[in-house]
Image (tube, rainbow, N blue to C red; front, top):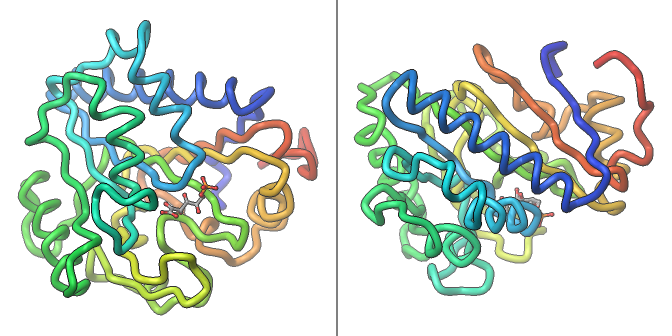
Length: 251
Ligand code: 6PG
C-alpha cells in the first residue's frame, strides 16, 4: 500500500456508516462543483447497507446533489436483479429507491445474463459511453466504494484469479469456485486504480485477521493491489475489525 493511504478507526459499525456517508456527500459536492457531475461506484456485500441507508435519509439525503449523481457498480453476482444475493437489489432497497436519483443515471451490471463475457463487455461499453472515454482510455470515478472479504478479495477480484493480471479490459466475467455465487462480473484493477478516490468499508471482528494482513503486513492480496495511481485511498474500519492492528504505526 502507498504511504498516501489513510486509515480511520471508527468506534463501531454505526459510526463507520455515518463517517462513510459523510465522505460520500463531501465527494459528491467536490465533484459536482469541479466537473458538473458525481460518478459514484457502489460496493456490494452487506457492509455498505448501513452507509446507503444513512445517505437515503435526512439530513444527508437532502445534502446530496442527486440530480448530478451517476451510479455504477463495482461487481455483481450472476443472479436476477430482484434476487436476495443481488448487489443491485441491496443498493436499490437501501438507497436508490428512496432518493431522487434518475433511473436513467443508475447503471447496473447484468449479472443474470447467460453470456457473462458479453455482459462484461456490455458494461465496459456502458462505462465508456457514460464517461465519454475512447478506446484505450480508462473511466475515472470520483469515488469507488469497496468492501473486504475474509480471504482478501475486493469487488469480485479474488486471490489467485487470472483477472488480477487484467490490464486491458475495464470489466471482466469471473468464476470463483469457492464463492457462494461463483459466476460474477467485476471491475478490474486498471479502473479501480484510475479512480480519484477509493474508500474501503470494513466492519466486524471476523475481518480483523485479514485487515491486519492487508494494512500491517501488506500481504499480496487483491485488496492490497488497490492503489490509485493518481487518487486517494481511504480505509474506514471499525474498532472490532481494527482490533489486531498495530495502532499508531505509520502507514
Ligand atoms: C460482493 C462484493 C465483495 C464484498 C466483500 C465484503 O459482491 O461480494 O462486492 O467484494 O464487498 O465480500 O462483503 P461483506 O460486506 O458482506 O462482508
